[in-house]
Image 1 (tube, rainbow, N blue to C red):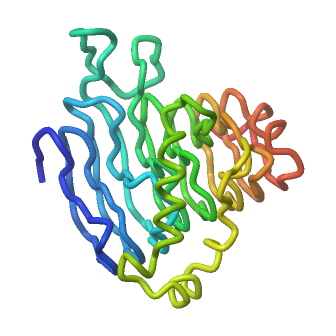
Image 2 (image 1 turned 180 degrees about the vertical axis):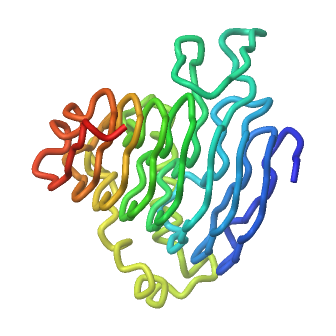
Length: 273
């Protein structure tokens, strides 16, 4: 499958239980797949070379700027070599190539983006590799499970970034909109009682979170990090992570990762190459 300027496929926010499996996609303009909605299964796909003509792109990405829609499982996918062109200045574009050189790229592409507060997602058994940027980015989401994946040959294996919500920042206006939608589930056609029974963690979403209070309850366990420049990078909210029983192999900054995730039970083997 080869797409144009946008995404190769889209799962809308009102959809529930979509099964997206056994697809091969490559050389998409921006993302391979964007999903919203609830309880999807995205598995056994092979997606590569997303972001041929657009910045901030990935083989799989979430949308919506909301924590309300949950329950999706991303499992047993092979996501690799996001690339193409990125904008380095007004009217200036550089060709992305697999490897470690990132100095000219303002927004490197990512193999899997759990973006814009996407929450309640399980990411398990995937192979993510060969990104000039990040293998997996968790951008503010909570209640996500990242388990038994392989993060190979990326500048960073995982990044955790809780968007700033202080007045005047880009994401500040979106939190009140999400909160209003959450309080008005009935008016939008949902049974509030059943919805909270299905996704009980929603009861813990705060109305006015302080920094570090939005991105919580994240489980990162039993993953393999191999040949990444930096296995793990926390931009905000690191105290909220449950980081345990991971294996770091042949990464340049293994011990930095463990220092940033103390008492994780993780194991470092610098002799494996």
